Image 1 (tube, rainbow, N blue to C red):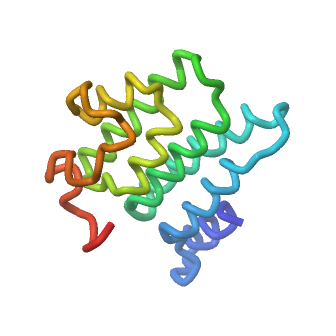
Image 2 (cartoon, rainbow, N blue to C red; image 1 turned 60 degrees about the horizontal axis):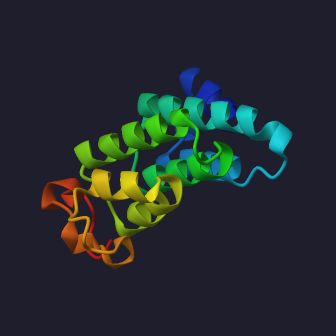
Amino acid sequence: MLHRMAESYNQGNKRAKPNVQTFNSCLNACAYTTFRDEFIEAFVIAVSTFLLLEQYTKPDHVTYATFLKAISKLIPRGEERRRQVVEIVFRRCCRDGLVSRFVMEQLKFAATPDQYQDLLQVDVNIPSKSITHRDIPREWRRNLTQGR
């Protein structure tokens, strides 16, 4: 459906332009892939969806959180590529000022506990479960709407 919308838009149908919710829905579908033999394909689709999004719109905090959810479900814990992808995605989210509670929640599932604390730049003496949205730099959440 996403590719059909993009194709139709590229052929001149301006009403078919995919929006951020369209991309987020595709990422969410990838995150809920249930068959292990489809995980690699679902991850490839998630990455290509994320990259395609930038041609049509900008990600929002739901995009980043849902992509982190897909990573946590599709790449086994302990794999180095999971650690690398989590870091890349989270750093982009910080750069875009879109680190919301939802992003932090999904980061907690996608990252190891050490990586979670390292990425959030928090004191290791604070239990990670007590890290709140207000503990992160304001710059990381500057583009969120109120209450996110």
